[in-house]
Image 1 (cartoon, helix red, strand yellow):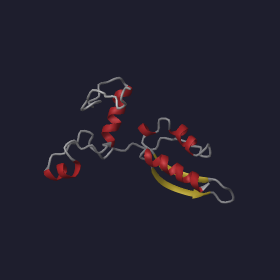
Image 2 (cartoon, helix red, strand yellow; image 1 turned 45 degrees about the horizontal axis):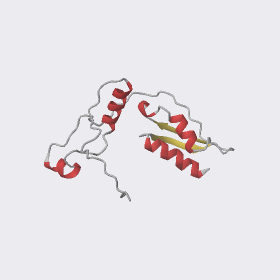
Image 3 (cartoon, rainbow, N blue to C red; image 1 turned 90 degrees about the vertical axis):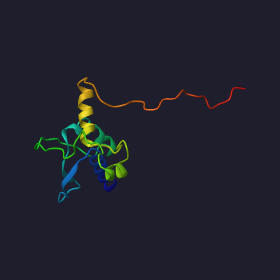
Image 4 (cartoon, rainbow, N blue to C red; image 1 turned 180 degrees about the vertical axis):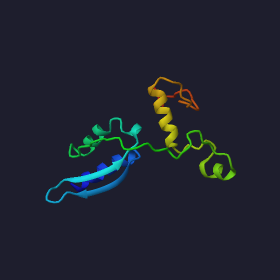
Length: 129
């Protein structure tokens, strides 16, 4: 059972979830977890957590509250320290930008991202005999 808890925590972590409370129910082998998960991350959450825990986790999603994402989706490095730490393009994943792009894609709107940055002609590595 404990390895299933680890997989459950891994799924929550991948989806930016925060565990608020977790404990065993007395007299049974039931483990209750109360966690917060962004709504945008909740799509297909039930299927993924069931798949990862072999059907032992039974999620119940209930809306709790609104919360502002504390990251600017349009941030880019401006100071010398930021360029030194993050690089020219700041390829570090910006969670808010990822959410904005996912919603835009889902609604069929334009997304500002490059699919291929430096394309070269594909070469075959195997020699013809």
